[in-house]
Amino acid sequence: MNKILSEKIREKISSALKEMNYSPGNNWQVYASDKSMHGHYATNVSMILAKSSKQSPMKLAEALAQKMKNDFEIKVVSPGFVNFFLTPEQLNQAWQEFLVSGNTQIKANNPLKIQIEFVSANPTGPLTLGNGRGGFFGDVLGNILAKVGHEITKEYYINDAGFQLQRLGESILGLSDASYRGEYIDNLRSIIKTKDVIKAGQQAADHILENMIKPDIKKMGLKFDVWFSERKLYQDGLVEKTLQQIKEKKLSEKKDGAIWLKTTQFGDEKDRVLVKATGEMTYLMTDLAYHINKFERGFDRVIDIWGADHQGHIAPLKQGLEALGERSKQLEVLITQWVKVIKGGKEVLMSKRKGEYVTIAELIEEVGLDAVRYFFLSRSLNSHLNFDFDLAIKKSSDNPIYYIQYAHARISSILRKMDISENEIDCKNNFILDHPSELNLMTELLHYPEIIMNISKNYEVHKLPQYAYNLASAFHCFYRDCPIVNSEALRQEPRLKLLISTKKILKESLSLMGISAPDKM
Image (cartoon, rainbow, N blue to C red; front, side, top):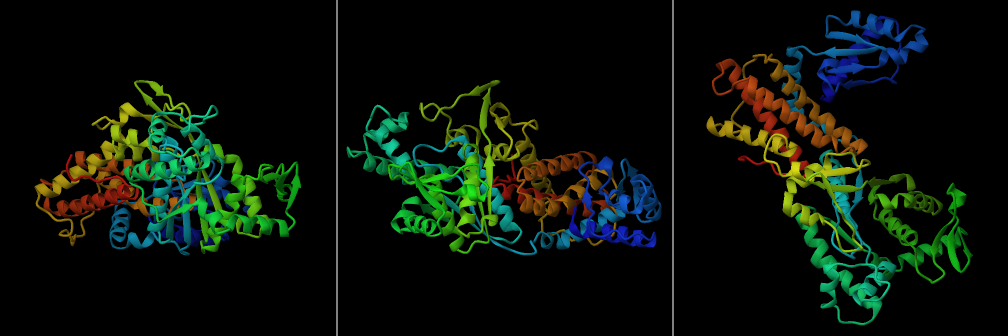
């Protein structure tokens, strides 16, 4: 729930404990409960104080509940939680405060300049479902961080140099060790005329970027502030400059014809190759140069979103940055897990190298962008995602995104039927809404600032689609139980205000996720 209410409860708890001759300190929490049966708020203060007071948590909790019984309805739960149930009057007051100041509560105390790099797929083929998962997550995380006041730069790193382009060139020229296959490779052979492997790879990569990746990015609803080319690192001498710094700091050694970074000095299990015996730069070498460039651009925090196959690259990169005196603690790397498409109860198999795969663009074309975004966002980033194709195309309440969008459309329909503008309702009467469905809808609305602030800190983006679903569910119950068009005059005005508040938060939640909020369905 909103910050103002939780702080008021915390103040009352502190005051009660002082009257009981306890000094609680600050190492305890007041937090919104996930389930109404556990109250609206709960605190763990009794368990924190138990050791120093030499009393059981339950005994302390019961004493605190007795002290505060005139302020709240309270229930003590083992092993010592104190659960607070707000009265209808308290909920109505909090909701009215939220209408006035709710948006101002969703602001970070210390706004930062943050760069988020995501997708960054090698320009060797179409974007995969895995690229899509990181893409949607990075986009929405950026939206939420911007919502709370941070200055956000969304960036795509183009891997348009290195050995993968040689492999792409070999594939175009049909050499025996070709790595990439598929219809798009066959099409590129009719476009790329050079017989030089490296040039063929570079030309093919440029074509794939402009004619496959960028159009797919647009279909995904993504917009990048910066497209950063790996070739620029070489052209501007940044890779060579970084390698020279490593040598000057005596952080490298030459072994077996290769140049190694001595990351074992910084806790790594083994040293890492920077330059192969062939003279080819490794991913680690170019990534070090790239991340040094990021920090030189003045970012306070850098967030990278990588696929699961890059997990082992995190520690060497951070250790290399630390060795070079860079701010490795300001770099956060988030890993996406695999995506499977389930259709007709069976997995749709994918293999990029064999040329048999479902691209993110194909999935969007078949299912629709809104459904793809919602389902991709609805699972924690570190969990595997089984995309239920059959559910995603359903036009019923079984489909969560349909259920949410229908709530918004239904509210719009009510307002049209009553010929009421969203800006016309100014609730002047002091009528207290007290039906359980009214109070439940208020409670969900009051959760919104906290949900957004928490995501901006813990990056649990999947909590937003979950919240939107819970809000829609609360609305549908409210619509079932609490008539508006034919309600008595005293109730109609605050119910309309509650309706409009719900429409606003539903639309904003969907907008942050890059999903449309239709007025008709």
